[in-house]
Image 1 (tube, rainbow, N blue to C red):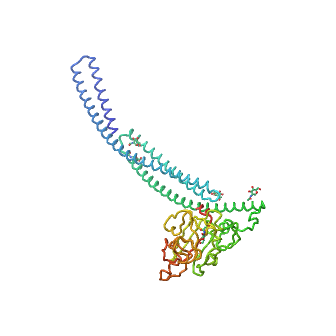
Image 2 (tube, rainbow, N blue to C red):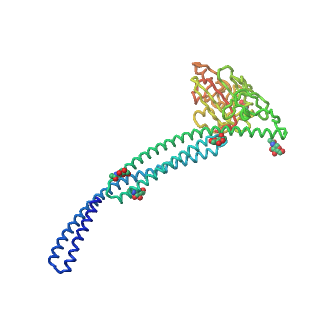
Image 3 (tube, rainbow, N blue to C red):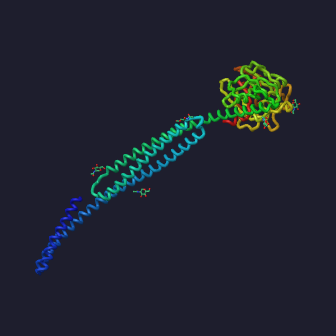
Length: 459
Ligand SMILES: *[C@@H]1O[C@H](CO)[C@@H](O)[C@H](O)[C@H]1NC(C)=O
Ligand SMILES: *[C@@H]1O[C@H](CO)[C@@H](O)[C@H](O)[C@H]1NC(C)=O
Ligand SMILES: *[C@@H]1O[C@H](CO)[C@@H](O)[C@H](O)[C@H]1NC(C)=O
Ligand SMILES: *[C@@H]1O[C@H](CO)[C@@H](O)[C@H](O)[C@H]1NC(C)=O
Ligand SMILES: *[C@@H]1O[C@H](CO)[C@@H](O)[C@H](O)[C@H]1NC(C)=O
């Protein structure tokens, strides 16, 4: 096209110069008529040349317009993609910043205990590098677009869209890359979650260790003061299973404890990851007769390694020092298990060992053992303190329990192997928890245990 244009211009210039010379010369000589004719021919030639030039220009402009329209449509599409890319990039940025913040938080909290944070930092840095790469690619793209725009205004003649195709290809590659990154961030998040769980576990272990240290310091103080407190020797007994736990005992079994204002006695301690529970009752095989009188329920009976009732006086002395939790576990004959926890307080003998559950039952399951503000006194066959006026629940059923009416729960009833007696009047004397397996289902095993309420504050 350029060549054609140049030729046209050249032609026009030649034509005009060829006509103007004779015109001037002949005018000077004075042969006016001949000169007029010659000039007219020249004008015709000139006009023809101009017409051709105009047509050439018009064609050229039309073609250029079409190309411009084409390119601007492509640019619009590209613009959209760039905007989308920008958005995704920002999201990536936010994600990686959140990740970085998390990694930072983890590092601060656990740098002494764990070295996972350095791994995390590496990951975050890798993400940042990835971001850098994306940015570089974006810059390159921008350059390309710029040069394309410039090329368009200068080089209007040539039609070359291979640049546009290259950009499209690059964008697709970029999109795939971003998807990949998002996926990796997701994986990173999952890893972080797992690590958080681990950190929480470790934190609770640290708390236990701190408690142990505190206790040790307290004991050292007492020892140094040489005071006449109960534990004035390094071999002093723990006051309950949780204290043994805090002193480093982690194996369940028999321990001797000495609650304040009490003689030492042996208990079975159930050691769990979060603390030590003092077991106060266990049923598992029917080897011990639980149909006992008040005095036996007061002092306790059975074998600590088998079935037993620890005794109301001992339970009272262990639990009187502060808020405690009662945990009740039972299993049925399909070996399914259930556990319930109650914050509670137990009165002493002067109030017939009344039980106070310190929160109203959260669900139906818990409601089988509930007390009002006054508390629920303990009853045996020979000491009827239940809330039924016309009936002695302990006599009507079996064993000793915090009976309200006679039908909600009794974990000290008669032990029945499977299958239980068919007669209802026999079966109702069994070990039952009405709101779990029902009034007439004799449970397979039950365990009751207590621990200071602080044991719950850890999880
Ligand atoms: C591209 O988008 C920007 C703003 O997002 C706008 O200013 C510009 O005019 C757009 N260009 C085209 C060719 O659509
Ligand atoms: C954590 O890792 C870094 C290097 O990855 C190492 O220099 C440092 O000693 C490690 N710290 C601990 C407590 O393991
Ligand atoms: C189009 O551009 C490419 C490189 O961008 C170049 O190799 C090619 O020769 C150009 N085609 C035309 C027709 O100008
Ligand atoms: C030990 O004695 C000091 C001062 O004599 C006192 O402040 C501290 O409370 C005592 N510690 C205990 C555990 O009695
Ligand atoms: C404790 O039980 C006895 C016998 O059942 C009863 O006489 C007494 O009033 C009870 N004491 C309290 C404080 O409820």
